[in-house]
Length: 83
Image 1 (cartoon, rainbow, N blue to C red):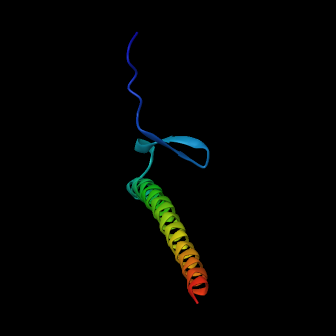
Image 2 (cartoon, helix red, strand yellow):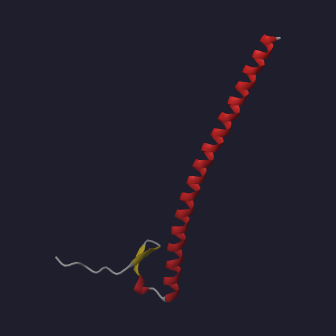
Image 3 (cartoon, rainbow, N blue to C red):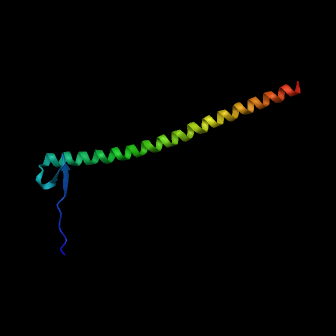
């Protein structure tokens, strides 16, 4: 069983194309597409993290303000009892 040396290739419009069959400009475009796809994935991952953290902080703020309202109501009821 010999190990096959498979040439690097890219799928363009559904066709598997060897990089060696592309000219310099086309290989440059392939590199740009791959690089931008990687960046898009990283940025989307960061955005997912930001959205998750933002949700946590919004919920914490909401919970905190609800606690303040409850404390204010409770304090108001105690003031009425004293009067």
